[in-house]
Length: 157
Length: 157
DNA sequence: GAGTCCCTTGTTACGGTATAACGTTTTGGG
DNA sequence: CCCAAAACGTTATACCGTAACAAGGGACTC
Ligand SMILES: [Zn+2]
Ligand SMILES: [Zn+2]
Ligand SMILES: [Zn+2]
Ligand SMILES: [Zn+2]
Image 1 (cartoon, each protein chain N blue to C red):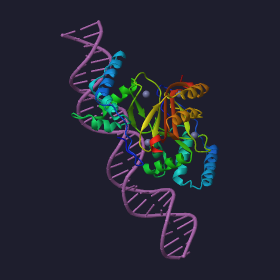
Image 2: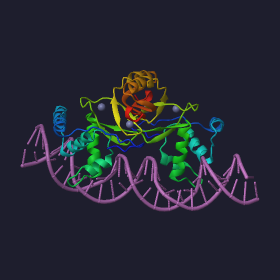
Image 3: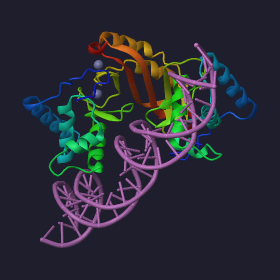
Image 4: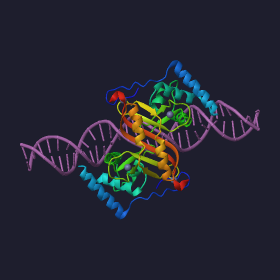
């Protein structure tokens, strides 16, 4: 899935079959609970992200959308929605999007990104505690956080 | 300088005159110490970043370059150089570049970014300690860090 | 000085990323 | 049913960044 920058391949384990259906079904419930709608395009983009199991570029989603394809605005709108509801995150340093494994609530995300195989791991940003202190000291009202660490994953070291 | 998303203007205090000359001169010393060259285009881009005193888009640098202008590769090369030597940082979530106030050494940077006026503050990423722990736990070799916090600065609250 | 190497630059062209703008369709409530 | 809000389709365009290749220029050797 991900391009191996140093030869490794990065076998991101995406969802398929039963597990995928379950995840999508659960997403539907959560969306309804939030008084929003999981429309076809939103559901399809989420499905693609879950299948990939790793970061995906927006134009790869557009290409993979299938059945008549999708135009950029369709996919970007779906991504915006998924981010807003906490189903996906945008990886700023990669210009890519990834499904959130903790599809539970909206939350600040932190990632470890392998520079070799492209794999990513979403970690708990306990670090935000430190940022909150710094923000407070600057009179800054914290509303969101992007944390992306680059390096080498265990498999690529 | 920055576009005020909610009416405020964001008067980033950039360098000018004497202070600017001093900063550029010091940069020349540091570059020489690193056995590199502060060429005209690199110096010019650093000057523009220092004058701005805040985040600047690459194409704004290209437009402001002056005297015959500059083509994209010229400016992007200069930015890459300035980042490599620790004179500037890239703000991933803004697609913009900013001069580093601690033009001292290469270091991991962290930013508070005001969603209203566009002002940024570079803070000390003590947080990296927390990330190091998480990276270690995942068998991940940490090599770089991007931390960008969004919110409202003191003036905009 | 001529040759050579390596870094830096100039230039053209292109590919990848994202959004504006506008009209149409769907949805859900009164 | 009728309306307003939300979502969508479509076209076009703006913005961000890089590939590729030829050319300059300083440093070092012979
Ligand atoms: Zn998440
Ligand atoms: Zn890896
Ligand atoms: Zn810095
Ligand atoms: Zn502000």
